[in-house]
Length: 111
Length: 115
Image (cartoon, rainbow over all chains, first blue to last red; front, side, top):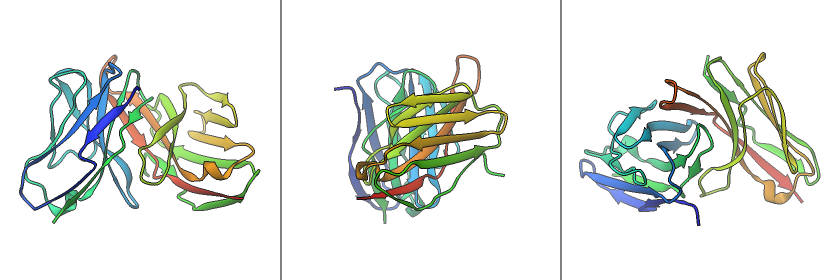
């Protein structure tokens, strides 16, 4: 089944403890992206990548890092999480501009 | 002015009604236009995708793009309770030719179709 898989689905962590949210797609897509979704603010792009080793900042990149060492994987790294990074995170991938397939989401709580 | 504006609703209609959802945008660089549907506790799901002005139909769904007015619409005919979800418009452009993409979403309109 063609899909984008994110892990974990739910995560509660403490301020300052480094964490990684993994994202993997099995569709051989070039484009991959990370978003956060917050009430009243909608989906906002954190980082995106058009291919291996090519990444660019989105609208809200502060406090996040990404890497694209393999085409299928695009992990999101929070080096020192803070409470304002509590949010619902989505990874997505596409073979063309715009037509993204989204993962099921990761609900992160930073206390 | 925000890049993409979408009325958050909520919108409540009876089963069988025609639903019209709309977004306006300000950035004329946008090339690709999409509608996503998001059920509660799920990721957005691509419904419609287009890159030109005009209408595109898929079953009960019709997407309309008017680039001159910077306005896009999604029409749902014969709406069903299973259509109850949040609908997100989205639009994008390539930052460089063959390069990275900037994708911007509207905030979503919550739709409820009542049996």
